[in-house]
Length: 477
Image (cartoon, rainbow, N blue to C red):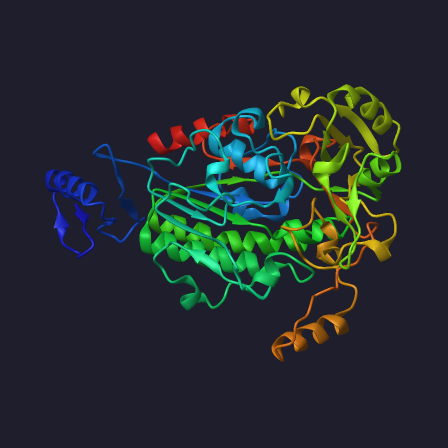
């Protein structure tokens, strides 16, 4: 005997018909044993058949070495190190997982790149149309929670950071909520300042975990993707990895695990990269400027990089940089020049790293394991652009981990007071000391135990390129 959600007994043959009705109506039919045993759920229909539910939790910075401090995450199944693409950064790794393609095919060659047609360097773009290739969630009832490239993604439910920008330069923080769950009303405003910046920390991951659980319980999608960034913050600020940070993100994940169990979803855990200790910043654009290759424009707001007028410049992205060169005849000359710089491990054509895509630079620079690349192109801090001392991920022509630090709390409070009083202000509290960041990523780890991992049922893949097929198999089982 089986009990339906209303407590009525269901005979074995009647149960088959009842489950079929649940599938056809896309309902979520709860079934339990007469003794109130384990909950089974049958839901989303695909091709008229009952299908599995899966939840993929992306825990940024989680490594096999750190997994001992995360028992709930470890319970997802078999844990193995896996190989990421290069650069080992968020946007490229996620695009590879979603499509099963290398960067040369899906086109996401970093967290940002040079747009040759407009002569602009843009980071952290959200348009899903930038990712070439079919994503494994296409045709599947999906909730995509804070994964990148979420705008216009072909999913049923989604949530992603999306501030409002006023014509006077003001900004109001908010999210783009396409879940139908009114998440801000249920949880309060998304803690944007905890998602990135000097105050980045645990509250953002807690909010995302709670939001994901709400969507899973209320909408019961067949596939859920969620993103917990907590480890990415202190592991860039500090050279050591505090187990307490791992325990904290494990607790966040536990909220999602509980929701997954309630709706009968299997959990798969992934990470994009591991973070390595660093102590040596390398200023690629200053090197190129000293060689007379970088063009800038001086003005009332500091120096502005002019990539379209530069003979060569670098788009720095953690430990990997794209080097764009105007004259193809000078590629070898510039390659040799950069290879002589301390902190640079090698400089190679993009094809050697499966990065031979029109968006890539003519050369790719890789740092030594203890080094990372700044975007700085000015020689004197007095000439730095005004945005350099602010959190401005879209205007800076490269990634800036110094945004995780603050020069003065008193100054920050004064700037907030100016804002509340209605005065124009700039939150210029970000230091220009590139020696502050002590963790980075972007190249392959020294050992697999310090790199990314995947945890899941059966035999998880050893390469991110195989993850799309793995998910499809799990959905079909």
